[in-house]
Length: 427
Ligand SMILES: Cc1ncc(COP(=O)(O)O)c(CNc2cc3ccccc3n(O)c2=O)c1O
Image 1 (tube, rainbow, N blue to C red):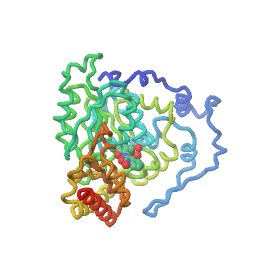
Image 2: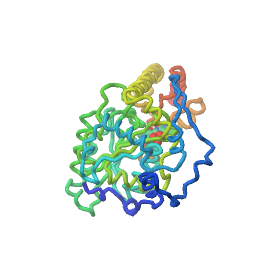
Image 3: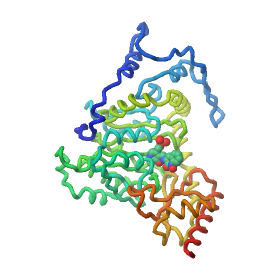
Image 4: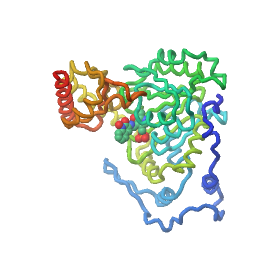
């Protein structure tokens, strides 16, 4: 793989920050080393000298003082070693990426603890796309990603999805303007990047089948496309076994995978993971050196201690409990939709995640109904245009999240939505 093909001028011009290189040197230097190099604060002045965590299962975890001190101080950009080691074990166990054993310095698997996948995605796009590039994006798509990419000013080519996720035939159609050989021409405007949300799609709740993933990966190989796998809902697949990830089939090192602990352990701690070829992950690390330096040490150490306490099997049990919760929420949501919205709204039943994607029947644009009429009835949803490449175009869709509302409240919410739709029909 020629990874420079996928990196823009800004990213390729980034150099390791001298003070961040210093942090790495200091961590590897012999204990007898005296450093007067780094402008790090003297930790003896930090008011916090101990942290303990009480878990919902009644367990109390006292964090070792040396780990607290390490977490309170500046630390290495890739992540605290304890956290990185745990994540490497997890990714190997769950995805067993083919490039884990690669000896190619650029292709070999690398990982980075990021301050949430939102920040990681932002840095990845800021490294991999430029104005006027053609960029393939699954549509409808996560509004947070659209907020990242639209200001960059690339040409975005929407690739349609259905209840089984991104449609490979639509991807081929989007690429039909170019021949695969054009990917070898540095002056060609052939797309180089595909972004997709493979499980529990936001906003659709749809998940890619394994067969489609394998077909999409082959298309990426044929056209030398790099694939961003944004997968915060991987563990929110309701059924077992999990549909394997793109990372698990990535023999070329052309997948950059984003995992998030937001839907599993805590969203406020802002901890995610980016996994992929070192040549690309390193560029995100260099960007982090110049921006946030590293993910919060305290967030990492809290999360590490919870994960360490759970152990791998405990983590797997926990995420299954989480998935079962959202499955029961999905059931309550669909029950309420069947009761109040039949004949007014069309939907597919999601098999993962926390979203229901609803098409308002006989409505060309949901925006005013949702942002004004529904709000007057004290019920909130997100109008579908927020998830489209052109948010100015009328969109009959609405996203509902079934993550937080009780079954009773979902019933009331859909009753109120039904009133809005019936009143709109009668006017
Ligand atoms: C596909 C996809 N990729 C990345 C992310 C970001 O994950 P993180 O940075 O690791 O936490 C997300 C989070 N999605 C949302 C977040 C959110 C936060 C406050 C309020 C509303 C929010 N709504 O509506 C969301 O959809 C996502 O769905």
